[in-house]
Image 1 (cartoon, rainbow, N blue to C red):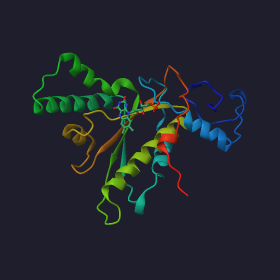
Image 2 (image 1 turned 135 degrees about the horizontal axis):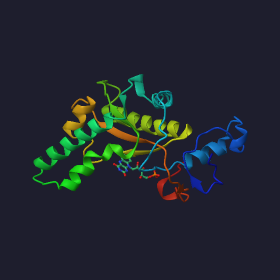
Image 3 (image 1 turned 120 degrees about the horizontal axis):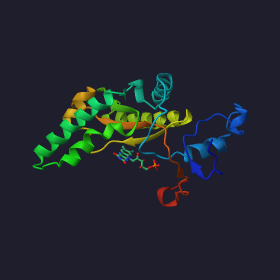
Image 4 (image 1 turned 90 degrees about the vertical axis):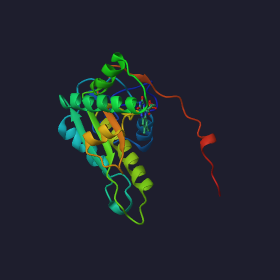
Length: 219
Ligand SMILES: Cc1cc2nc3c(=O)[nH]c(=O)nc-3n(C[C@H](O)[C@H](O)[C@H](O)COP(=O)(O)O)c2cc1C
């Protein structure tokens, strides 16, 4: 488990405030939980172990508790794993070719292969898409923000279960071929590909962020 005292971040599940050998389930203090949130780092090139279906469903249940004005549930989750990642890769390839044709560009074989293999960078990809509703009190931007909050809850719930993630989009994410592959309507968006798995590497904890230039208190 990461606390502010740890020097690295990892696939740190929330289990105990004691040494992991004791498997003690003592709840974290608020300060420890804040340290744990701050210890989240995005990790690329993820491998197995991957979350189980039950673990993924737990994370999606957390995602679905995101702030959601009028309870519209303006998001959907699509879990891509195993062979389906190759089909997703095909959709990205089609999107890349269509985008290049539209923009008068020629893509190298290397770029085409790289594009097709993008989904192989993790054993599980959870795609979060909007499913926005027409509502006179909840404009589309609020529903989009709710999707972003859902993504962050998803990422933290995966971390809580010991997995690393990286939120990716990329320039192809809302190309027609990708939206069609995920069944996303013209007025909706792919908001995240949450690449999920286990990282063989660790990253140092991020340096403290100076919030002064980012914040203004008024009283
Ligand atoms: C909407 C959104 C889209 C993103 N898309 C990508 C992406 O396509 N590729 C990428 O490397 N990082 C992307 N990022 C950034 C990473 O998720 C991550 O935040 C960044 O690498 C910083 O790492 P950290 O989360 O450890 O601070 C995106 C972030 C957001 C919020």
